Length: 175
Length: 138
Image (cartoon, rainbow over all chains, first blue to last red; front, side):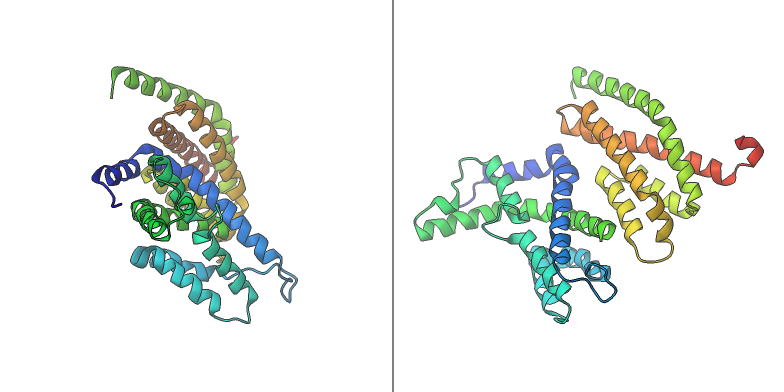
């Protein structure tokens, strides 16, 4: 069940469209604002610091995100989340924040992750593609998941840097 | 672009210009707030240059949030004005969506044209407030 030229072209056409640009500008931004809210809420569940302030990760920790996105893309960001979350384990806020950030990127089966959002776009463009979770055959399910993942890649390449920009700026503003 | 689309676009530009005229007192107020907060001309020019060159409305919003969220002393004036600026950008975005109707390319264009008109208003009033002699202001 390989990707056809028409399927790939449809996704490329969408990425080049004004609809996609508007999605990056509005819907993605709104999604990021909610994601920041989720992270802050998770941090607020921790006991305040010695000065009685809510716990926050240092903004400098987020500076590396954009550079990682440019050089290593999605996998780079996931690796960063894992490294940052395990560093300086005395600081609970680091673990909590980076765990939430990783959830935002990829958590399954949550519908509220960035990955889920992009899969939703792909399946919206190509509605005949079955939901892999509805396929009982393990081998077929794996093939379908791989297909959707490959079709998602051109969208994720465009979305990820803008997502990180929205996220970082809103975190800076709110934290 | 069809002839009809062209007409629609030109009508949209007229609506945008009329709206910017109505919005003028708000833009003026923001310019005054920027001067009162003692933002430096380089900071204002930075915002203006971004608004003029960006192809994404959200980049303007993110720039202001980023500036206000920095941890050095120069960020303090941004923190005084950021909420007001962001509220105005939100108003412009709502209006842009209204003018562009269901056409994503028109919505994007409308939002950017509104932002550029707004930036001209706030920069000119910032400079006036900052530099004009008291007797001229009166």
